[in-house]
Image (tube, rainbow, N blue to C red):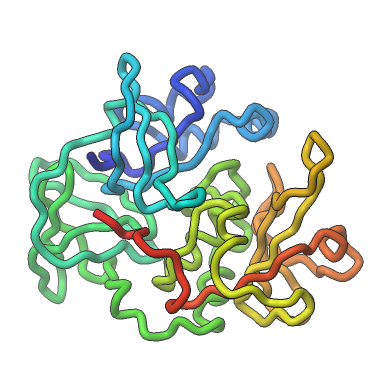
Length: 304
């Protein structure tokens, strides 16, 4: 099965969505309207009550694990989590899924600017950064693509082949990361409409064709271990705090810019920002530094 809407929320259970979340669970979800409807307290509730678990873009492959009424529990195959790595689990309406036809062509992803897909049946569907599409044929102006909703076209300039990305260095990575500055934090957010701390790092690295796990705790296990204090621009910094039982655990991740500066999605109702580490709580809580490259990135994230 594939995600059949621009962006799907995955919930902790079919009962997790609240009345304020109805726009996001409608058969044709209005995600921008949903975000606009929520108060600061509503956004905080997503986190405090652990209602939302992740998000998935249009055409993302999922495996259906169970069904309950009009809802399905799925695993998102390109968001690895756990040891051993498996797809991220969560619940979503069955209306947000479709069975794809056999796809033949070259895989591309939508660029940072986004695009509108014009389906052959006349439907227009907005697409977000990193949405994956299979291109059947392409001219200098337009690309003909196959999707779970049928064939369609979109501008060629709105597509990129991740396999063609040659520059995986820190400068290119940080340039992309800075383009998200000012975006509002969203618990479990994994799209340009809103990101949490690990959704931010997951998205930025995938945008440079470096595939890392979805959650901070899993990201902290991969890549190359770097001694804290020896970090370089582009490294991931992980911070730990006591949980409710008093045990220390990784609860935050950010991207190191150099010059003692962290770029991160800090907390609920804040925005992606730069943070000086010295003199902040992050100096005390830094626990792990990891360096991801194309040679040590997670495998299987693009499984179809």
